Length: 277
Image (cartoon, rainbow, N blue to C red; front, side):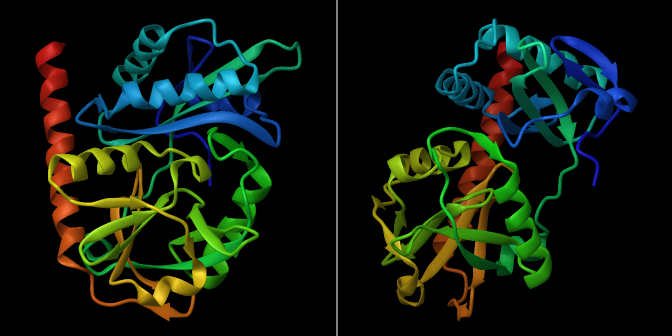
């Protein structure tokens, strides 16, 4: 599957045709990146995504030589130059052969859950692996290939990572929430990547009096929960029907409520963006 989609990508602030992408893009095994979603020509929750990107860059010792406003201007140049329609945009950063930081901004091939999956849930598998630094959005090419192979071989939508102590931390491309007594339980912030969709869900719960508990969950406990869902840029709020060999109860009403609240949040973000533009 190609890495880059649409007609144009951006390299260090310069718009180039997608036909040249493979000639320039040769990332190392680990590199900083960020992925966000566009809808109606608006980059959703972009401020949060850029804040995390720059935080990761600092942790990696990179200096992007621009601020969030400058990056935002480049992103909207890219959006306007390409064909319309919702999609996902990726920022990738790594030192080039000359030691200078290379910053790519480009549309990626995306796949969103179907209406049936949002309604009935998806299957996920478990995989014993840990991220070296869960607080940084760093691409681990080896781990990505391993989890993608599991998804293909086991015919599952996502893979949940299990640490050395048997606790579920996060998905390969998502955060995870468990439901018990109408309360959300999610792994502690310091042990997982602080997903932007996760952040929106936590804020939604605070605004709507939905209790949330940050707590470690052992993989042996999965069967004791009333429900489970994953969250992410493409997944939003996506219920799980089966985790490994464990079948889960029918999707709780709370998941559907969160899906609705999230869609309302997206519409509000787009409306506010248009007012301010």
